[in-house]
Image 1 (cartoon, rainbow, N blue to C red):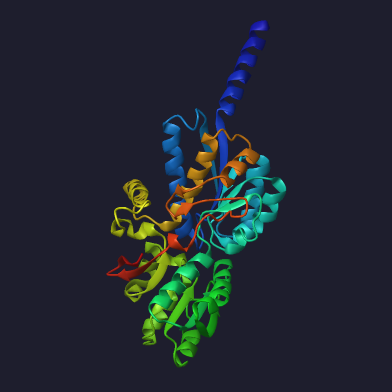
Image 2: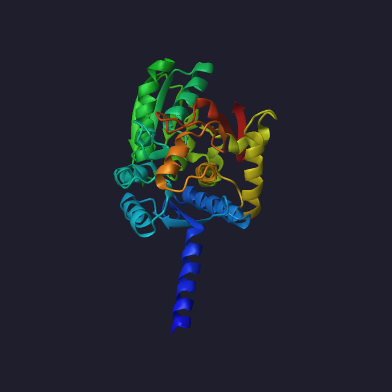
Length: 376
């Protein structure tokens, strides 16, 4: 009997020790559904980095257990999965969600549960105003708009039409396009929208075509809508230059739009044109290393995978600094300075949980089915 009790105690001790040697990190990712082209590279990147860290012994001797749930890009599913990560899996931090609307849906839950969240979505509303437990790695749409508008100013473009998706990302972008226009002496001559599931935007584009003086069309959304816009512009014979948002900064857009993608310009992270960057750019080496690792395992790299790279690496920095609880991880994240990531160079503070600025964007053009750096 004593021997039996000793064995049981030993097994329990080993189990508790093994449990103590793992830190659980959750992730909410759109692996399936209409935004799987965003979520799949995020999932791939998270698993690639965590597997590599664990093979090397973990962080300070502690391995990471990554728990990923598919949100399908749906806010309701995201809330359910977030609850599971917090109350059932007992994770120490959460990465994601992929989409802005899904992120906004779980923020009240995150704040109540006091779990640090690093969103991979763009909307400025995620971190404006600053929320104690919420950070993000995707650049705010306001930064993308500022970079695009500064390009317009440099090229004497002042009269534009906007066509935005009726999604969290599209609506947030629309707000910023309108709010920042006067700062750059830009006049919006047309303000059209489309539903996320729409596949034909000819009626909106005909209205824009018939307005005199439009010097550029700006489409703000994520696939597949923007690809339909590109096709419709070509079909209608519209010669006005078409600009997109960073929401289509992946090869998926080029595949969907086909030849109609040619010549489209957009603000994007530097990953797409890493080889074209000056050799003294502080991100260049990091970008090229990530691109090489990712493409050797999964194929073409995506800026959206970069959002996951930045999130997991900043959590790793927090863990290396002996953060063990959600509160300690949150505090360490807030003190990150000059982290050279894929999306940009991050500096968080008490009043800034977004961490980037417009200089983290460049302007690219689609040429011969690929990306060309045109403004650095």
